Image (cartoon, rainbow, N blue to C red; front, top):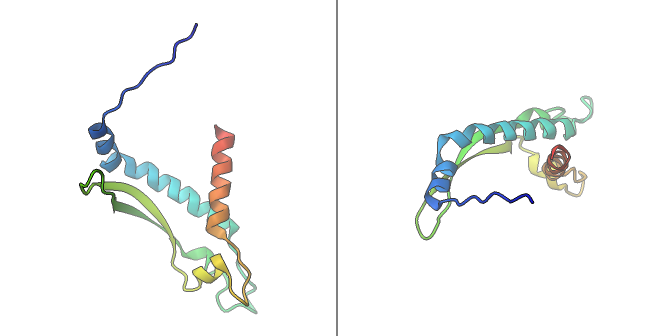
Length: 121
């Protein structure tokens, strides 16, 4: 009969892991992969008809991010990465309006990454 291994973690050790610099690099790698998939799914537009052709696709930026997450009343910093589209019309492309259809680039990119994670196991 096989026995399951048991891991007992400590809050302080997990907190140090989540706030340390060793977790920053994997977060940036995952954010780069997210931005790459989002670029491939983003609309481009026709150069003759659209004044912003290709601007949305070229405006994805990955930045390291440190967030203050209070735990039991104490401020604790957690590392991560953030993917932002800096195009002035990024909100319109994502959510749509009366003249532009909703493309949902970030939403569908999250779905693609979840499917890849489930497939890779």
